[in-house]
Amino acid sequence: MDINDYPMVRVTWKDALDSDGTWTDLEDILKHECVTCEDVGYLVVDDATKVIVMRSRIVSSEENTGSSYIAIPKSWVTEIDYLTTT
Figure (tube, rainbow, N blue to C red):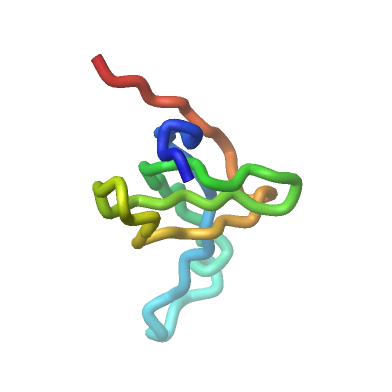
C-alpha cells in the first residue's frame, strides 16, 4: 500500500441521534432530527455502497497498518471534501 494513493478528505454525513431515554412530549419527539457528523482521514474506499475513512496509520516503510477507521453507508454521505497540504 502506498499511502499517497489515498487522498486526505473530510467526509460529512448524517447519523441517527438517539434520545437519552427520558419521558418526552410527543411534540418534542416530532421535532427530533438526525445529526451531521464529520470525519477527517485517508479515503481508503469510496464505492457505491460505502465510504471508509482511516484516521491513523503507522509511519514506517515496513508497516502497512492503519487504525481508527469508520465505514459509512454511501447513502448517509452528504459531502466529500478533498484536502491539500501546503
